Length: 305
Image (tube, rainbow, N blue to C red; front, side):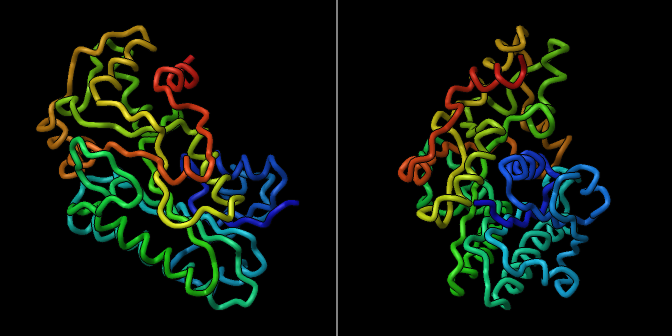
């Protein structure tokens, strides 16, 4: 039986794949977008594309009635600008206020969705060295950890009105269309690729097909709720990641990018890029999600060849 599903942030990397997957399986998909016309051109088979400004719920809240699921992916791209106080404030607000306004709008209706699924990130844990991190591991102490905590808390508030909530703590999503992998490819292709930082930090990755699969699993599986680690079962050190990428591309991995260089390029965001996060998807595995890609080389081969 088809479901009626609203997605914010559908024009992003994960959103595009997820929205198309839902449309292809026969669901009625409503896109909330800052640019509805652009969204219509990207998703011609969507049921509806709604102009969405999260600061003005009165213009879109009626669309939330009689839906089965709301998937909230929207938020300012962390790496779209160099971090300063104003940009960090905008990053936080785009997640906190948008989530709060969606939750409050849902609460105002009698016929509520069965589930509210919000994006989050493994940045919740901060830089954790060698520790293995499950969903019960403590929050980190940096800016991104604070953002994730506020973001998730706003999502959890929906549970008081009987709606299941899921917070997807997403790792490094591998895709050639956008994201970190796409940024790493040019240096390798010109024989100057290598690891970021000292190379010893743990990198928790997952294939784009698996992050889409996890969202579909979260929609359909009523036993899944709360924070969920979305990362493969086999995190690798950055040195291994770079060496494996070089092997798949038939290129050497000889030129590491030191942290001080990253700081010159991206500023404070370098701390996020070089953080060590050894994440384990304990909750997903316990409930029965089966990853399509748990081997990094196989994942990269699938994407790049």
